[in-house]
Amino acid sequence: MDVNKLFSLEGKVALVTGAAYGIGFAIAEGLAAAGAKIAFNCRGEKHMEEALKAYAEKGIDARGYFADVTKEDEVIKLVADIERDLGPVDILVNNAGIIKRIPMLEMDVADFRQVIDIDLVSPYIVAKAVIPGMIKKGHGKIINICSMMSELGRETVSAYAAAKGGLKMLTRNICSEYGEYNIQCNGIGPGYIATPQTAPLREKQPDGSRHPFDQFIIAKTPAGRWGEAEDLMGPALFLASDASNFVNGHILYVDGGILAYIGKQP
Ligand code: NAP
Ligand code: GCO
Image 1 (cartoon, helix red, strand yellow):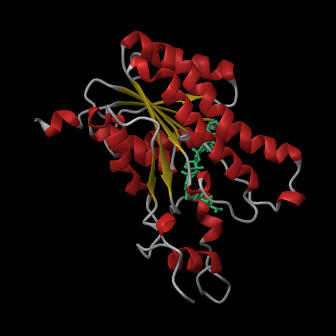
Image 2 (tube, protein in one colour; image 1 turned 30 degrees about the vertical axis):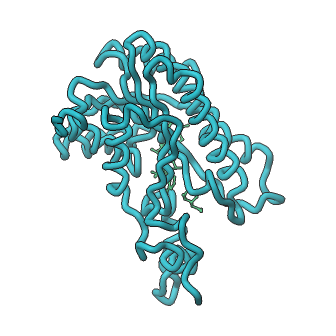
């Protein structure tokens, strides 16, 4: 068996949504290292400029497109533009996402709906836009970026947990509905990863001590550390490559063991 061929993405087109920075950027970097042509989207000029510079510094000729994943017309144009520039999408990573940390009773319905819209409805919109092309090509890989909150809740993240729990089941349903077309749809469930999204949970206290939540996560994680976005490169490459052609509907948790562990006695 040629293991390099098994994990090669040469000639494949990968769309990673929201990959201007953070987890999406790291996943795109890993897929590019395996030979994929990278397309990503974001919403702002500043992030686009910084992202293109960052990709270029890594020697990656990534194509950036302006698109809000909540807007179906923008997503349809995004997929058409990628097909024009690079070819049909072979690999979709539904990464774009937000979180709002607000106690449920204090959360406005509009806030709850926005999180559901971006974290659950948008992965459906983007998957719906790329699946026809995958069916035509006879293969496709969809990777939905779920979360530990696809399994667990905690205070202040009701909308996010509901969205990520739904995304786990959307992943299983795409697997069920399109597996016969040689499309594998799986999820990655990152644990606590050091990115802008979790920066507020790691802020140093005025006395210079670690944030209480930071200490909590360290105690709850067998690996004894926060994850880095780079920790997701390998799992994403596995699920994007031929190495996972019989893996479907699976959520791969990349969490340092936190979901398996009751936590250290205080
Ligand atoms: P991040 O640093 O906040 O990056 C989120 C990305 O999503 C940004 O590029 C953002 O672009 C983009 N985005 C948000 N809304 C968008 C929209 N409507 N249209 C297009 N792009 C949009 O977050 P992250 O930590 O890298 O997380 C990435 C994914 O992993 C998210 O789905 C998150 O829920 C999930 N996740 C994160 C962790 C963690 O601990 N960090 C753990 C588990 C799961 P803009 O700059 O335009 O806003
Ligand atoms: C939070 C964090 C988590 C992580 C991640 C864990 O506020 O608890 O932001 O939600 O982002 O989703 O898997």
